Image (cartoon, rainbow over all chains, first blue to last red; front, side, top):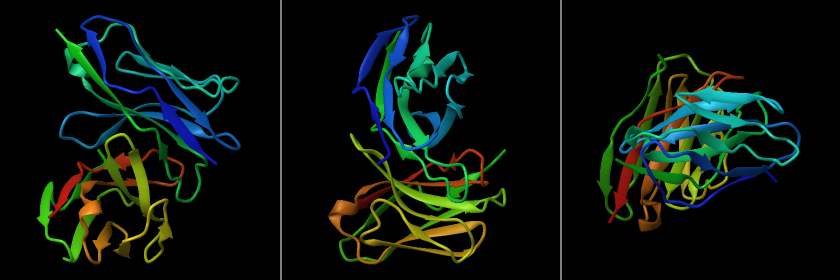
Length: 114
Length: 111
């Protein structure tokens, strides 16, 4: 079946540190991959996405590359800020058609200290 | 901008009560979803709908039902609330082939 596994949190970093949050997936076919972010007290927002192998999604300094050979979609940022403190969810969509439900990882909480 | 709104941010109910959670989207999206979010488990799909009056079970439909009488509105119903349904409930919508947009969530406490 389809599943997503993320590294466990919480992850605590100092401001300007390098961030990596690991995400691996299991899926049949060619899923689309997503990173969503949830700031405290809010719903989820799409951070970035990639729809095919070797695609790189990027937004707000965050990047992730769709690696089919390692079934991974790791999230990276070169220099984190206090305002990046949030919960990050990796997700896949097995198909883009009707419905198009998302399958989520368990989420990784990031805390950035000044 | 896409807007997905949920009727309540916080809700407290008693065991056995019937609970309605409402979700409205303003972008004419065909597809709507209800998830619950629990620590360490991420988001799990309860039900989704790809058209008016259509519904499909997600991964954890037990104890829930849904209603989609109008395209913009998707309701989640807890027929008889139980304490293990205490959770954060998130609604989402999407146009076919595009990204899902989420509402702010309803934090439900069942006593």
